Image (cartoon, rainbow, N blue to C red; front, side):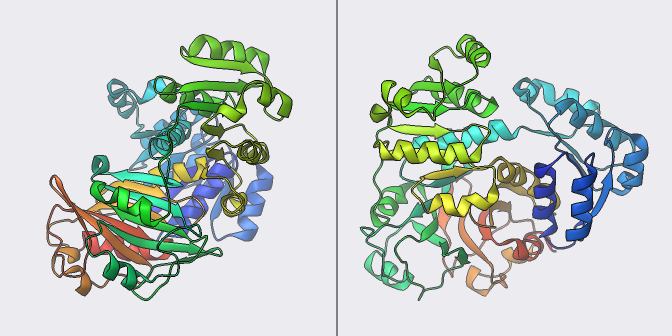
Length: 449
């Protein structure tokens, strides 16, 4: 697939690196920063072009007429919309534009943008705020993602000493608990990811990725040594687009306080948020946080523009006894460290953006996909096409790549945990956990005739 990515910094570069890890992708980056382009050209195999993506000449030099996919993810949404519209006219088959204005995402506006050549819109801040809201609904999980309205879910649980599954193999767990409605699809340990087999053993501090049916959630949490928390009081630090969007999603269900150090922005937020108490102050001021009853908070969400501030703020909140901490960490190198020093959940806009876009690089029908924080892997929901390879044999006889595993199957209104004898049928939605190097083979299994 030929992909052109227009960016102006880290988001475009990360997206290019994420997509280039998949097989058979020819990627060209267009970026106005010459230093970044030089770095890309000297350290990667990507084709890089310096220039303005709204220039017809620059897009032609990027060979946009042969692009299967044009993605524009600059910080300026107007540039993204114009880039996508121009790219479509110049021959790009599919275009995606990053936006900030949530008004554009309304269903009645989708056709308007398609008419000018913008096929899809993505707002990373909106995606991230939805992830945060979901984490507060299911407080025992470090990360969670629902498939088909919750018929199956992916849970990430960090195993502590009290977890009953610690020092037990998967075979042991199946023997002890034969009626479980969940399946472990990955274990992340010491920066390595394991696709588990029957004799693999869970250890303390493992990050366990598990696919579960709704009926299996309570057993899953019990075996993982987790308890649901009762969340009522929430403190948000950072009044940017993520903080504002998060507060809007939470303020009708929780008592929300939002800290913003910029006075003018605080006044604007106070006007826009109906049920959120907006406080003009710096969250790094420990005395101020104590005065605002940080000890009485059930959840603490740090979403400023500084990863370091977010990490430190969450650690302070944990010190004051806050039950649930969530940090926006944009520096991907910090994610693994952050998960190991006491922060409950890590959110990253680059990964959220990649989650949305990866599906457009696949031939199989992808109804949901999530690029996971902390590990280089995706979990996706794919539709089994008529006569595709996955419909011809039971799961145990499928030629699944070693770095991928089927976690569950949704058939109509029913969901099933994947077991060896299960036969996938045409139209089934299948949840697959996959490392990047296996995605192309998974794609072929679901699409090949």
